[in-house]
Image 1 (cartoon, rainbow, N blue to C red):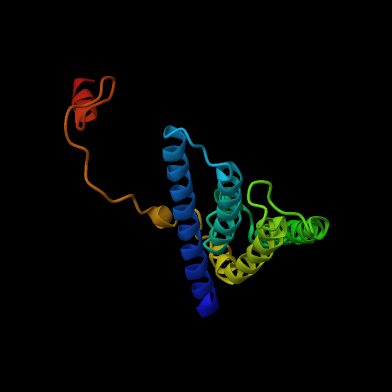
Image 2: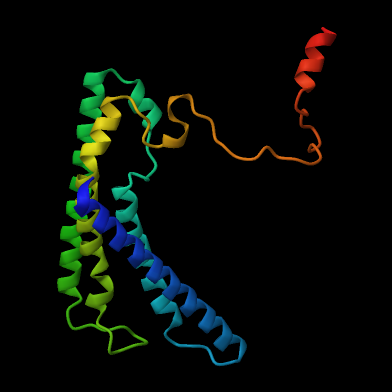
Amino acid sequence: MGKIGRVLGDLLSWAVIALMIALTVVVVVAVIYRKAGASLSWYDEIASILLAWITYYGSALAALKRSHIGVDDVLRRLPLGARKAAVLVSEVLVVGFFLLLAWAGWKVLVVLEGMSLISLTWVPVQLTQSVIPIGALLFILTELLSLPQYWRDVMAGRSTEHAALAHGAVPQGPVPQGPVPQGAVPKGADDDRKGER
């Protein structure tokens, strides 16, 4: 992915973390004020804006890490030529969609010029909705930055969705201890049954 991708990934990670902390603080403060009988007038508006920002910036981060839901198993089973075509078509469709979203988001910003939030009149709506074109362009950038490694992985038949389980690996971790849940077959019970047959 390179240095640019790593730096952008770090920036997006910290931005999403900061937005999640801000949203948590806003919600907790709003609940405390509501319980005290003094609801905050700006809470709903700000919380929904923060959630939208988390969604856009988080989706760009997920695109950089190729963490969005896909059909990796189907793609890997295709012949090499069809696999190449499928990756190219999907990338063109994704980038095309987000170019359209960025253009539409820019058009929305033009329409919203001069408007402000209802509860916080000093905050321009253009600022809050700027996440649409910015998030769309970030998604395109991160998709393109991660494309070379994704291409190599898919062409080599490596799973990008199940990297931890690729090539016959099994999940590592402690074996559960304690009573066996009702209806479950205890470890080794299958071996006992084979001897009875």
